[in-house]
Length: 325
Image (cartoon, rainbow, N blue to C red):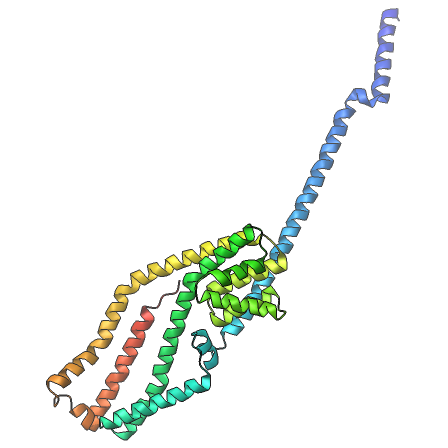
């Protein structure tokens, strides 16, 4: 074997031994880097999984809180006693006094019908119906008007709370600011919230009294936001800011629905009142023309059937112009 070939073989053997026993020369540094990168990816994945579990847990907590709060408020809304309806209409009167006034109204109607020479049995029926229907209609209109005024001012109250929270005020002080600055009837309702806190109730329990007076979805939204923030935490100012925008959007939608349904409401009022006005005009012009309707049995039956049909038609038209938004 030539010395040159032997030297080459020796150099190859030495190089092989060097690559075998000195891993750094074989690129192990890149292997370590790959190991570290892989370990870093695993850590990032674990952190992402942990964050996702935290978000899922928080979401479940919020959903449970929303469900429990909605069930509780809906259970309260289902109670429509006379005392509750009077309270929700903003009228300061005792239920016993209200019933007494209804009885007095029925007696007055009965006397008026007797003076108009209506048969006593029909006078009693009409007086009893009037004593029940008319006060309930008045109560429903007052309740609706009170709720409408409350919803007009509620977005301003929520925005005032948002501004107070963003400026660094606690939630209680923000509510106290609303109770001092906003218009009625929201001012008195938030004053009741402060009174509930003064007797030792929590803020979550105190705001629930708002739903007792005004059982509407908008008030339910506000109570749920406060309850969820107290239970699960979060950015209260952002949540209430979003709620204020939702309330204003619902108010705009209400105005659009009212404008679009005004023609149908006018038509329903004209069609429903036209038979009564025609009968009154005919009775004034020719009193003897409609007299058989109240002096004969057949006329009384026809008058009763016509009254029932008119009431049914008015009820159907009223339901047709009621819109949910």
